Image (cartoon, rainbow, N blue to C red; front, side, top):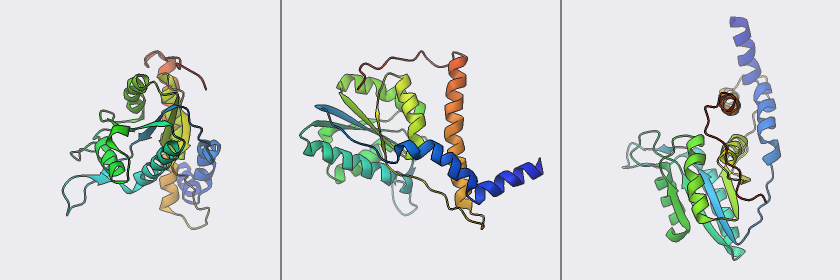
Length: 226
């Protein structure tokens, strides 16, 4: 048992395991095309907040800025195309910081130029499954022709599966792309990336198991297929 654990640690720390695992999760999202319709919704999934000791309140965490930047990039391109664009920021306060991810991220997007009338917050979700569950009725109400799902490349595959389960046929837009360092010097960074990839695979496996056991609610067919 110890020997097996040591081997797993070594191939992770050297970058061999995360290289293979991340390639399988991310490769198809290395480049994503954005094609706007008349009415568009841009869904941004949360990735935590931080509470600096010398400041009151919560702020956007460092790992979430890529998602906000990409969402802003898509929003501005949408406006240049003279299309209707709504940004939906999804995420609750799972960390107990006193402010939801949706509120904190929306405040930052406002300072970056997204007007309040083009922002919708979904503040109840504590995980990706709930992001999809709670965004589905909002997207139905908006009647968006195209839905763009903005999150990290490593997170897209699972997120798309969950959103599709609730009837949302979303276009993937990757915010960031993870790459390990293949090295003979063990790196904790590579172990972290292995853990992130495992989390995604376990989430996908759990989804399939729950479906097989009829523990998930019935899947909803997408209202339209692009």
